[in-house]
Length: 127
Image 1 (spheres, helix red, strand yellow):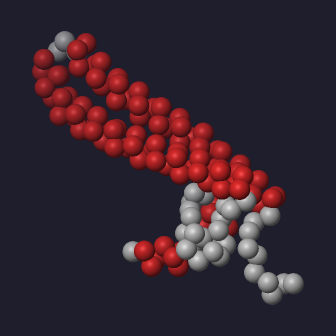
Image 2 (tube, rainbow, N blue to C red; image 1 turned 120 degrees about the horizontal axis):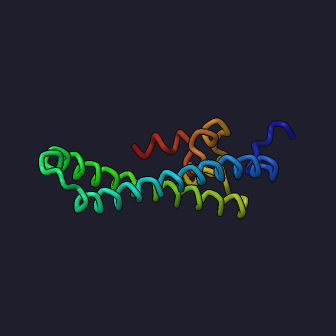
């Protein structure tokens, strides 16, 4: 039996990954909310600011940070969606299986990138 490669992770292993994903999801959502509030806060700040010199100095930074925050918020949202999709795969018991090779993605990789759908070999081929 030991020679046979596992085709999927056990329910216990899936539960372990589920905990990792839920923790990451919680943090990702908190980060996303923070970014969103940064974006809306900079918009309301523009009107309230009365000091003209400060306003000119700060405007460049505010515009950049709003754009950057917007980009980061988008990336964060994508990350949240990937994590949520990973939870669905856990429910379907297809989690951790490379979508290209059908092999199991090593646990070490999944612990670092819990939403991974490709093993390293398949990922390298994509580059």
